[in-house]
Length: 345
Image (cartoon, rainbow, N blue to C red):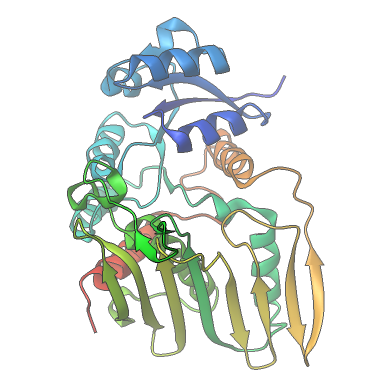
């Protein structure tokens, strides 16, 4: 019988449900414990996933401190990530924190001070990193099939705010300040919620070509639209890595701009149609000829994420196997997001 990592989840929202469902498909992970302030959610998860009563907690710290739990998935709102990362570090627990890692750069800077002292096991929940299509992207770039890298384009946008009224005129839906997406204090706004995906992808691609220097990354905010609660609902930015590679990123709560990414080299380009959930193939375009590169994905991104991270834990790795959003990349990503949000030039 294969050894399995005993996982615990803090916060039982939609993303936690995706994680829990996928954990049942793996052969190296088990959902051992759950924690929520909402007793109805605890009851629902307990019934759906067969979690024993002694591992169901209405106090987050009790789950973290349980000797039976080996790894914690922090699936709480953005504003709570920092506090529970610190609690996991203090309890010497391995953890996966949902994206974005923290609410701002100051928080992850504080975590970096702890990381420099003790390189704890850390991973951030960019599940797409683990999908087989990303392995294909990495191999194509390492083999320089598209030549020398010139630029990157990546976007993520879903219209959740625009609708047509009775007269057919397009209007914005009312934004609820109590919804974490639209509450600045809870780490709301499209840049942190969706924009963090394109920036993380650009970091991955650039890191394959040279060591990234946070002091040599320039960010220019090109456009930004605010909603009624004061958070960004649409924005774009340009990023320059080490004065060598340019990237264009775009994100939106008001436009269905999709989840496509494009990597351009001096010999061709690579097109990823669904960067964040994964698709059966990617397109390698050379001399205006399109070649489809198929992958062997049998499950969704969450499955591969849990399997990959659990495998790293079982093999006693000091950091997750690549490709992964490890601490160094998370630190750079939060720096870019902060500059984007603050309209830095």
